[in-house]
Length: 125
Image (cartoon, rainbow, N blue to C red; front, side):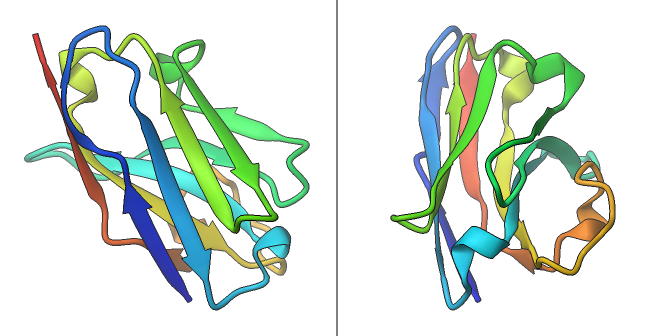
């Protein structure tokens, strides 16, 4: 399984970049997908997740209403649309995948068995 995240960079506060994560080596439509982030000196934290059926989405409270997770099963890609970015959103963003047999909570990184390499998002004030 390979997950390739892209779309990060230097963004001004209030900006709206979209992160993409292209997956390969798995039956994408059967995997739940998530985004996590890690800021310098902090632990990795959950940002958003989407179920394999696309019927359920989950968000960190501080990004609700600003970020939207979506997936395109035909393209084996999950997206994170980020709007109204704030300096505190600065972090390395990781996409992750969890197999169909995983029953753990989407909010916990331990529920995800596969991780991408991360893409840096830096928000300037």
